Length: 346
Image 1 (cartoon, one colour):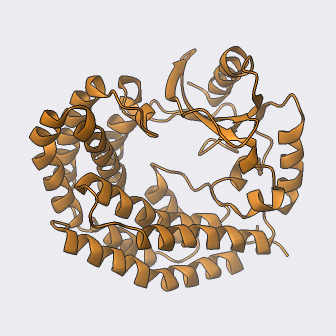
Image 2 (cartoon, rainbow, N blue to C red):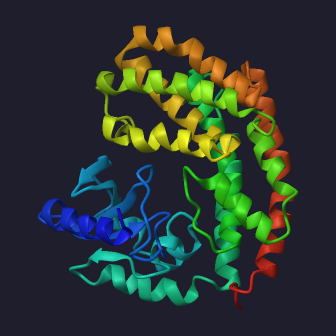
């Protein structure tokens, strides 16, 4: 469907289901669709990110992916306390992009458009771009430093995988590009190519361990993920933050999106989300279906071993340390992109 149709569906969902709540403050669109025209195509393997803002410091649990009027919406709730300080929003790499343009869906109090009016003209100033790059770098370093070797295997993989993946976000932020989630590696490849920094891209893939993996191998492990995913969906009972990604309606993104990447030649770029979804499935199965968790665990461990080279905790810690040693080089490239980027001002 067209993005304009998806945005209209999002507006209808907000007015119907979010606005009646007593703590509703407003809603806006974020994510990879920001800045794209209404007549652009929204692939079946993508969703539209909608953030519902509520009063106070706590927000309801994230409902995740919801089909509505033909669109797949990714609904997230955010407390106003997270957005109350415009300077803090400007320096937060995962927040500022949502206010670079006017993506407000509803704003009964006027606070969201006031925030947009503050952020938008300052977004591309060098000092704020640099702050956001530092924010992304800090997320890499602080979250890897907090990795606990005593956690269950799936939790350890996630604790390493996600901050390692943020290394792809640092150049994206420097280039004033959206730090997208599932498609971060194709996006950062394009940025690095545009700025003559192609040599960094194989290094980013090597940090994951997938620089040399073959398409048939990745496809095999995607097929195994599909089996685990389809077994997990009916087993989910315990609420988790990412529960909305482990539903039948999320399958076009979680599984079919990986197949789409492999089919177009981006099999290495598919590895990140394959492993993230695999680990999330086992995080849930360990609690809600221990027998199924045990039965499917060899396939997960094999995927991690084949796609990243990690077979034991020592490998994971060594890879963590490798990423931490890499961040100064990553920062040098980010600084060079900021310096070369004509959109960065001041």
